[in-house]
Amino acid sequence: MDDLRPLEKLIHETAAVAKHPQAPPDERHDATVSLAKAVAPAVPRLEAVDIIKAITRLEMIRMRAQPKSGWNDPYGIFRPLNAAGGRPAPLGFQQLRQLVAHDPILSSIVFTRQRQISRLAQPSRFDHEPGFRIRLRGRPGHEMGDADRERVRWLERFVMNCGAVFNPLERERLKRDSFATFLKKVTMDTLAMDAMPVEVIPTGEGRPHGFVHVDGATVYIAPPGGFDQLDEPTNPNYELPELEDVKAVRVIDDVVYDWYAYGEILYEVRNPRTDTYGLGYGIAESELMLRFVTNFLNATEYNAKAYEENHIPRGILNIFGDFADQDLEDLKAEVRAYLSGVNNAWNLPIMVSKDKESGAQFTRTGIEVNEMMFAKWITFLVAIHCALYGINPEEIGFESFSTKSSTLSDGSKEAQITSGMDKGYVPLKQHIQGVMNILVQAVDEEAEFVFTGDKDPKEAQEWDKLTLTFREARERQGLPATGLKILDEAPINPAMQSVYLQAVGQAAGADKEQDAPEEAQQEAQQEGQVPKGLAAIRAGLEPEQPPENAPQQSNPTGREHGES
Image (cartoon, rainbow, N blue to C red; front, side, top):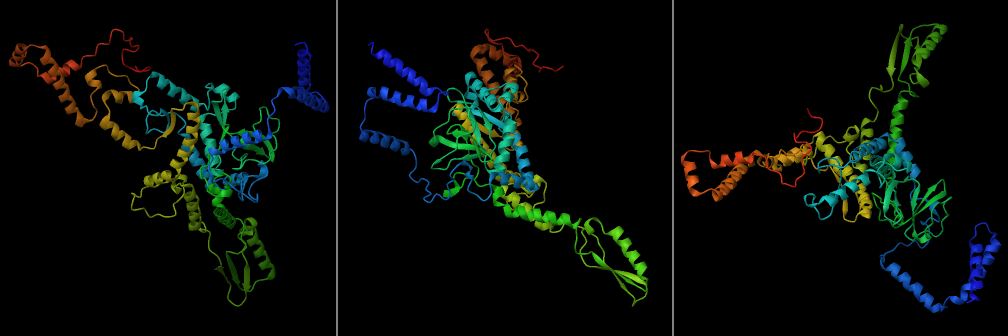
């Protein structure tokens, strides 16, 4: 026992030297070797065959959940050697972003969708209102208890604040956005580059504590086979994952700043490609319309130059008569001074002839700029922009290329805009909804995130008129129930009111017949008293008596705060 204590002390001292960051490298290496020799006798020796079998079994277990049809690049042509290799496309993320920034049509489409999506950043009370709702799967709203409703309210606040920090000032300190700002950012990046990476901020137990959007132009995902080599991040303040567990990296100017492991970042593409060499990236609409964007910019530039620069004169001025050379030079100088314009756009050639009598004649050689040149061509280019993004030109304030209405619609502006929203706005909303569902279900497995507002408000109002009771209609407006049972349960549908009154009268009459003696009923009928149905209605108008243990209402007048 006494012999073990010096050995244990030696092992502790050697380990301290091996782990000390300020120790010389050679001493740390020698200490590591000495430590390995000291503990080697206590480690059970395994045969090489057993080690190989164990490694092979672990690899088979890991690969069992993966599909057989993997990703292969035998020549390594399309597989980037490092993160800075970028996406396998002619244009990078920054080029796509600049393309959208310099094309007013693309910018209009992106900004329009941003404004539309930002309307969904608040919880909605009903399905026809723009917003979002948190639902518990398998539990309709009328079956949820108080605990379930509290869960839903907490999840709504979690989404509204992009995390579990509900104080706006503290949220700002943590560099987290509001949900409205988050929606605008992800909409801009996914429409411009089809890239909307979302970083998941975990708690100590690994559950999501918050989420933030990361610049889509700086995040590159790992190829299906993983990274062969990867530069370490610059000054990381976290433990680096294993290279095979790295899902994506953040790169700025060819410098790696962060590694993201699986579960730390979401990278969902809106237009997935089946190309083997796509490396998991999507297809951006702006990348497909590169030629059309160039044509639109050329047409715009051509129209602008028509007002500034022109190498073809608008016409030729012919002057007839015998004039002195000095007079002609003075006339030409006057014309150049007053008619040339900017960059000689209106320069006018002057010709003199002595064959005819004195006079002047102007011969046109070009077309007056009284309308935009190639207006139909520009309208066609705008239509191509809008077609790829699934948006109607009227939504961004442009004329549609085709004015013919479809036989399947009424051809109105409202119908055309609705058709465009179904083709572009709704799929975009469903894509963002899918990302939010991943985040919400990581917090609560039974929860479900749903965007609302797809239903037509007019149809929802008509449905409410047919199905709601008077109490439910008051609750929709934030008003309390009247306390009169027969009035609160009355339908607002006129067609159902007579049926309701008849049912109430029959129910009240049946109760009265059971309680009152038969003789009293006959006397009441002979004396011509009020009919049973009307008496039941009057009885129903009396307020219900609250139970003995029911809490007292703090607002007995039934009015909202602030009403006079």
